[in-house]
Image (tube, rainbow, N blue to C red; front, side, top):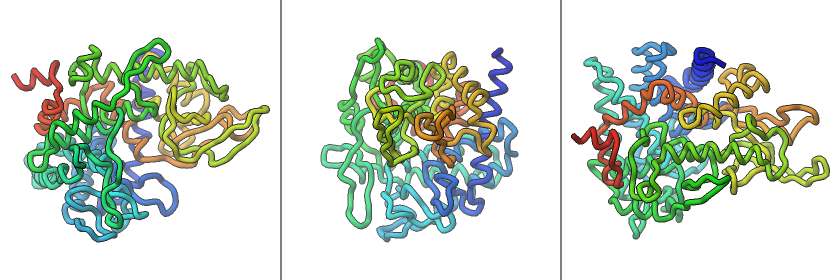
Length: 434
């Protein structure tokens, strides 16, 4: 494909994905469905991603500015007015919010946890919106004011354990969840926001403790900071421009987190080509293993091999759970890191396997060529689209082409402060301090 054809495909995939936020959002409260399944709740992470996508939609003419501002303001007003307290059906507590909320009422759903990382994704979306909507109108002023109030309200220090490590969350029935963030994962953004808070900051030691649990590995002759699911190498990068800046861990290894994600992307493809478990459909264009829906739980004998298949699980490579389930969306969101191997794979998924245009919002969660009808190139296919998958498609395609969201977040003081407190320096971060 030539450059203009590739760009056209990227924009087509981006526009199709954004439609999820147009039609799977409650316009009265701004909440976005976790996935478009019947009677499913909203997700605060998906809602945060929607907030980050509205500015992109305006710039790409997917949505006019007034509509985007109205949607954004409805969301912020809802979270400002929603009940914060220890009640089991509140929306949040101490500035944090429950992972899943009732799509209509905004009350806690499924007895879920008050989530530290999902609150971070929501707050990051609010801050991105505030950075974009800078016009001197009543609506846009309110967006900026409410985003600031809601960020300041989060008591990040409340979720610290006795060693200053950030916990996963809290439940009113049982108290703090007995897990903190360990190992490299999607919580980099959480740590930056917590350290950068002007009101309830976590100390720099919270980041130091987290980084002390990292694992440096060599896979397929490539050295990198290991995390198995592909999405963990993406989500913080939706908002944070980590190219050319380093913390202590990355200085030690003489790379940055952007390069690390590039290496992880190449390792995932190399694993699929190697295909050590012999799954169907894996190869140079068939890759992308991440936390996702799947065809299980089930055990089947296929071509003489007994296979175990899972439902939702933290799939990953090369050492994570692998049951032959692939996630095309996770390939599309790898675009900024390795376009030379991503573009052919996206083209393959769109045009050869026809996994995109036949669905309203493009790529569904996953498919599994090993599980399903014999002879089918796609096998089992998920029925659903998920907001947590859709948002990174829109944002990472934009970051690849224009760096728009990265540029917006560079100008947010709490982001730069949080990065510096985590020990980052170099590149644009030093330039912004000059």
